[in-house]
Image (cartoon, rainbow, N blue to C red; front, side, top):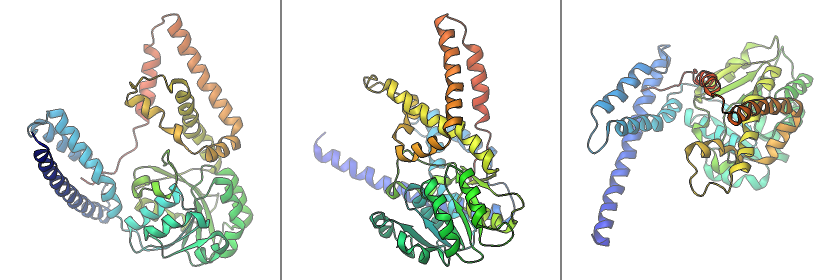
Length: 380
């Protein structure tokens, strides 16, 4: 077959790909309409039985040349590809004035998600001058401001999101409190809650606005920066809020509406419980990923499979951010590392003395299954 024939076939594939993407967009729009209708009728957003029936039909009636399993997997991927878009477009959140301070991965993803959920949101952004080029080119923001002009960005905001590094957010609280309006709700996206909530108690009242509610979406990527921001980053992820005791319900409801419109699942914890929980669930996996990469890196001979790549994904995470997070909780992180080391020692001894490993695997399998119990939105 000559080059001309290959080019012709590639042209046909390109045409099919364009048509496929158009049909996927149509599917996402229909799913968004279903999502809106379900919200209006207070129906569950996910229908697992329907999804399972769809996948089973694909498996039992696969189009050639797909195998039954390949057809099922292809439909599952299609559902996944349109699900997040459908969740965002199915939102009915009211339009807000939203200020985002810090326009890296998290702030950028928040901006994209807000606009996807409701194009009527008016966004203002704040960052250092060198980081404003990409946000400006995105067209998402009504205005962008350097840090010296932050007041202009937040003074008319309904909600302010602090998306800088955790301790920078802590340092911003006093000035933000002076600059925002009396009904504004201020929150943050940082991975440390105790420090910022204690500092907020010095500047924000629990009885009248403006308000502060600590927040932390359990989402992220190994990469950083606005260029890597994704509107779908928060879909189906827990978003923790850490209200203080006796705090007014008004700011919580405002944040809940917006957070759920982004596809996230609201979770309420105290600041202290949040910090105790994220060390084993977030900080420990980060260190284990780094350690595993250091152990096996350069020795895979090109044979690294999906498991190894998944387990070492976090090794690319920004070291500056994680140094701050880990050092701030160094005592608890050290305790969790020692706990992990004890399990490694048990497994090491079992392997060394050829003991059965079933009890370890069975226990781990049961605990692993518990990680998947949270429902997933899927307006199919």
